[in-house]
Length: 328
Image 1: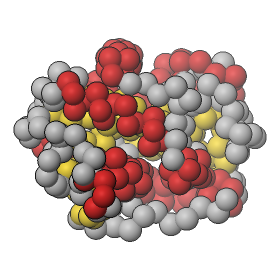
Image 2: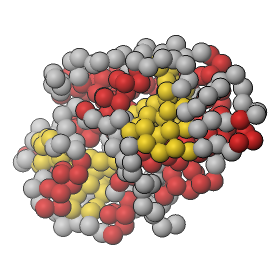
Image 3: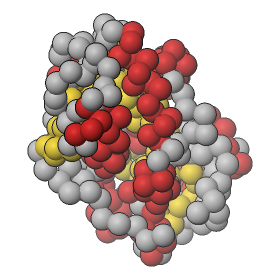
């Protein structure tokens, strides 16, 4: 299947439910719109998943669903906004591990509690991390890469201090006992990718969702992917685990969340909708194109909260050992 362009950008898009569905709706929602907040700019994975979900939510709820982009500060602005909205079911969030896990693990001060200030309904998808080098790089394997970083500087880029790709790099440094695995932070992954392709840095940890076509085109080479097993669509990329680094198994997930105090009946209804919507053919096909990993058994409710808490603990320990802290 050819990869299609990411869905159309815009500050907000309206998805109207069929009129006949409204007659079947329960006590909530009795009015529209229901806002689905995407805390990253149009065109990225959060925006794409939000716009994929919106028409199906609209049909199930019998109300208009609005995808509203509130980007800035690495997702903190939109997430903070949702945390302070009424818990009435009319403001929802496509939550992201970059905020709820990695920022929480590294920032000295957060404007909200990543767990207790939200009602977390469930995980939608996971975006695996991949270690990328240029096609012309002398590093053919992860072993060669780590061995080099033991004795000479090997520079890896990230989208910023405290980001997921920064912490993955620090974990590899710790686990591989590679003291010269040097971090070079950027203002986002795009400028880091430019410098990787230009030879200013040696590597970049990045979600595979944004790099599938570049890998297939041959401009980049992947040394490892953070999935438990190899990806069927990219079988030549070995996992970190099979190369001796099982702790580098993880992802950046997207979830469905709302402000804390969401009535149990609304939370339960939305939780029930998650596996139903993820099973829709158009969503399943698009997520497969992007190499995201919807779980066969979705992580829902309290299980999702436990995953968030466990990941915060794991990455907070890595940040402490690596002396990574974001003060501002």
